[in-house]
Length: 584
Image 1 (spheres, rainbow, N blue to C red):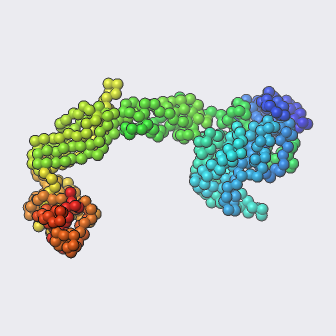
Image 2: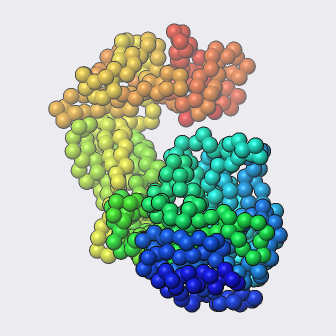
Image 3: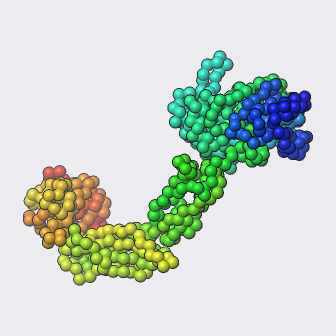
């Protein structure tokens, strides 16, 4: 009590105005806080020194508090409250430097309820030894677990205690001592973001030197509170901070031995966050949101939000809500300030139909049937066609029902390859939204055709004599024929596929010389080529899945249709039979 009187007299003599503070229930009386003005100097109830405060706190209230761990022994919290302590930070837990295990402070479960019952609001801190972001998140979750499992009402911030640890011999033993500044800063962010996501206010504790050398205190202060440790009467730290731990040698009734003591600067009271707002999102800039595409679910694109030159962090500096973000049309994203940011800002973006999925082509000698996966959410589809490889596309069909999933193009030239592209569209409030095109090419060919290569043929990447050569097809290999490709200048190429092992070469031939195309089938699985039309016949070799094979002749035996064919393996050309059960 003598210390309270001394503090009051000293404050008056130094032109510090005293105001009425918080009134708590229980045994704690009405508290006094200092309001900084004039010389910005004041005394502490727990030391005999006078402290000079930063001019950035002019006009703010200063609350007096302590932080403790099991090292402080047994505490009489009612005596602590009556001695002028207005808040307390309790160590919830820590990562041990020996085995790296996560541990709860042995006094936390005793201190916390006793402090709260004495009318002292509490925050907590957690000593980190995380060397990775994963470990930092693990520590944050352990801190949250300790709070919740002990059913403690933590109304003040949750702090990350970032400092090096030494053993009893004074030797540095912190596993995190070898981290780069960037990595250590990232670990701090991971811890704080996890704390914020759980609904608590994160803050970072570190000393003056460490805030500059070990972690990027300036960058971290833009998103989180800073609790500065600097044992002096006039700190020269120029960075942003909200709490100043000015001594580790305070004297507080109810606690034996020396105690850490702190100044808390705020425009509010201890029911508010120590983080003074530093920005209003009405002044924010939200980068243009790229066009999104319908998925059947709520579309939630990531945002880039800036206030001035600072890029804000989602979940820490703001939250995002979306409206009209499922179906095609115009959607809105609204950001709402959080932590040190207030206000809201909205940005619209477009949702267009998705690309048409599962587009396939079924061909005959004069027709090509296109099929796709439709959606009733769309108004329909537009289909375009080009009759030449390098020509322009012309709309050939507009479908006016989203549920329609096929269209047949009739009266086509035999073997001619046609190029198609299709897109969905949706009409919303008078505006038509088009999806991206899905393309496919197909030749007007009846069934599957293939030929045995009996001459020198090189497959080109594109239908041009100057195009890159993909592969030279060996004698005896089977080439699948996809159609006749025509250019605008009427030059003709032949679209083919050649399968070698697991690789398929898709390209173009300049001529069909030496090739006789016949009906073919495709293997549906790895299958044996046999010397005769029987499962008991000798297996000549294995034919891989999805291999085109020419139908030379057929033979039925035992209810199974067998197909005579060729297959080139290495340099050897085999002639044999494949069961129709493995062909399509």
